[in-house]
Image 1 (spheres, one colour):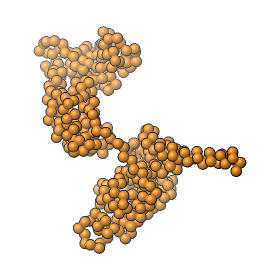
Image 2: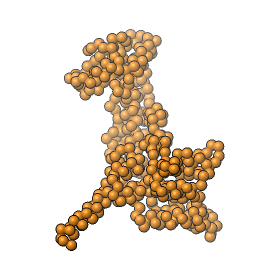
Image 3: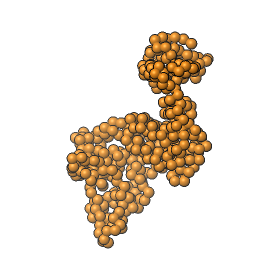
Image 4: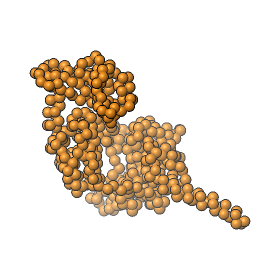
Length: 413
């Protein structure tokens, strides 16, 4: 046991020192009962010790791990715990009672409300809320969080799988993240995570690359959609009179072309504002893409599409509220996309496959993976590695061309 003045600097020194051969305690020189301990694994934890006003044994309350909780934050939490003890309130007892009563649903909800929502994008928050409501809550929601067993989670996953294989995996990953966060914040015991080690369903990457012929068919369908229109039996208006044709707004066909010609994600195009388009320099400035701020370099073909897009409101892709005071971006392209792919004979093609196709053409053309990653806005270079096999084909063609010329020279031809 040692006595030090616990501050950011001294805590850094303690954590940088060699790992102890046994758990070592450090008490603060100013605030009695406040301290931190470091285990043989190197983990540091802030704590406070106090004696309840009613008497009895001294109690120790864990405040949080070093690195997650700052020294000044831990000190303030310790002051509060000591003050409450002086008023007859036992925070350790209260936390234990809260642990015992918290349900799985409540734990995951706290995780979403207190961590995900303040730190993640709205799309991620909405996805987690749906996963909680549709999968976690019906199967495990009412069980006590501290009493949940791994076998319960495995059985729940098996039941979820009958509804949706991939969604079942996502639900378990959400549950595991909630327990990890809950352990750090005192909602469940440290190291307790019944959602870890679950046998998840095998997931195979589904990456579809359009061939030149398929791109041609898609282009023909887009031209038909915006000019003469689709016959009603090829569109989404099933109950329209026979012989009627449905034409699509140029914002819709333009949005699909922009995704193909830029490799942007669907939401990046649907949420694109006209004031984020710099036509003179050929750039898009996206303030909030999946990977943060992003600049997209526009080709002359993409610029041509933008020039043909009608300016109805603040968004490039006009939605139902275009031009209104409370204008909102278009939500999706599901119905027109289904009609276009059906007309083109490309059933099952996803809009996101257009992004893959953009990258695959770049790889096939011999562009390096770093260039492709830059165009797509990948934050992690490993994400672009999925196109490595296509890039290898381009390199092989280049090698054949070079070696072919050398071979001709060697043969004296």
